[in-house]
Image (cartoon, rainbow, N blue to C red; front, side, top):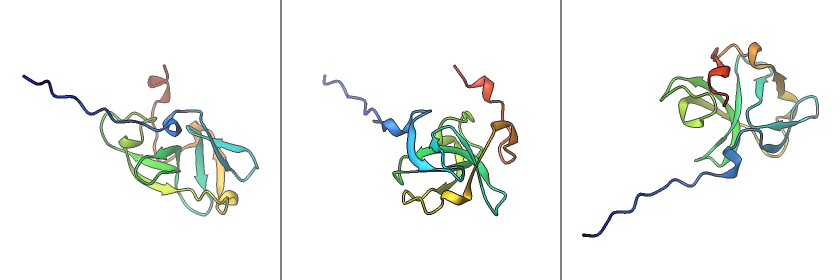
Length: 112
């Protein structure tokens, strides 16, 4: 009998938390994955993560799915892409996780 091989999903290095994104926020500092960002002029705020299908960084919010892990992009329902040409730079305001309104979660539970 031939044994079936399991397909293992290969994740990008960009999906790791604390990876530099080469994107700047409104203060001129480089954004890292895992940082919380608020979009100027909207009520949206969320965590910056890598979107596997779109192959770009973005702001994720709407933590509704799976095990509700805040560091897993698959657990979020909504996504706003961040342009890599720095055109959105002045709209990206860095905030603390405690200031995030949209997804109020307990981050300490997921930090290992």
